[in-house]
Image (cartoon, rainbow, N blue to C red; front, side, top):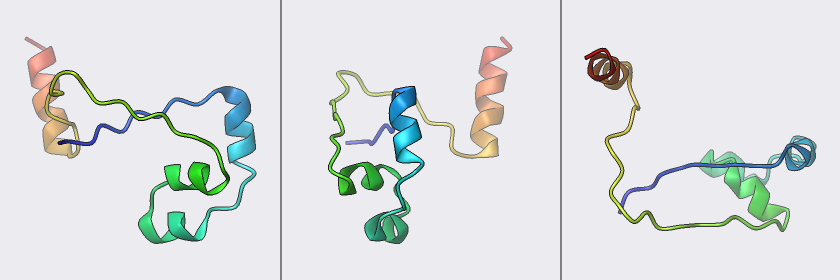
Amino acid sequence: MRHIGIYAYRAGFINTYINWAPSALEKIESLEQLRVLWYGERIHVELAKEAPPAGVDTPEDLDKVRALLSK
């Protein structure tokens, strides 16, 4: 299984989120979504029905995508 991190928040929630101090666990794990859970909010998780295409995680990956799009 591959993690696809897509996070969508309403503008009002973002205003709340930025006023929360980072949680201890968020600092340890470097995962900003842990702050949401720490403060008692929910996160929706969905399983993808299809495998996603390759990710863009490095400058080299970006170059490959740009080359594909330019064709």
